[in-house]
Length: 273
Image (cartoon, rainbow, N blue to C red; front, top):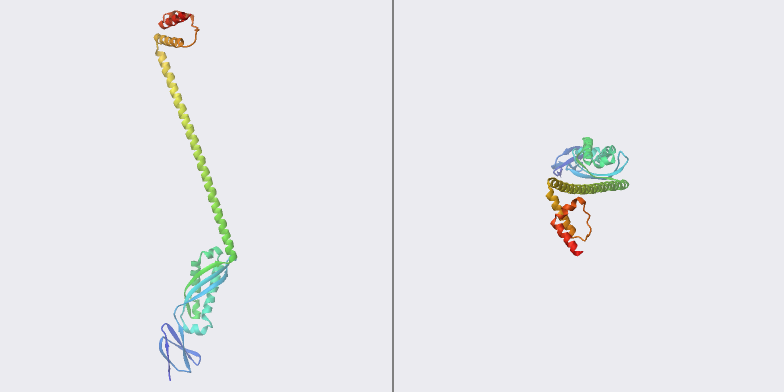
């Protein structure tokens, strides 16, 4: 009498005879001898595995917690089932050991900023070592790499101090720039005012010099009639004033009588007397 066992797709059957592995069968319909034999099914499909909160010490003695996930599949069902008590846990320990070694050679800051590099180095380090367990690791990814609470608090304080320092420097540079611009504006205003005053003084000086030059040129070309006319105008102005005593040089007395205006002035003066 034969028994029938259907091995599903993407599985492999391990035939055990009297409790001992004898051979493997592929997926599909398979026959075996009941009581003496049985067929154990092993899945060959890819499986995920999470390795959370794994504590690691970095090169600079910082405690970090690593959480990673990996995907693996069984490549040799017999090795997977019979040569290891727990092939999955053995593989996980291998991954943890190499991860500890890789991060242990890094400083904290380097490790926190190099998760992609760690993933790559870890995959290379494992390589074909997991074949011993009849398993192949298809993908490894570090989900989290977190410093301890004490280190995180210290990093937060350092980050806050750095931000405050940068802000203080920025404020100081802004104030210095403001003072520089204000000083420059004041200096420019003083220079502009001084230049305007200098230009105005020069303009006034040029105007006065022009006036003097014009008068001197006119006097240089004037004849006796001009000066007589000036004398007449001077006595006319004098006649309108309240003065009643005029001192005249003796050599000018003769000419005064010849001036009609002066004659009239004297006549008026005698009438009043």
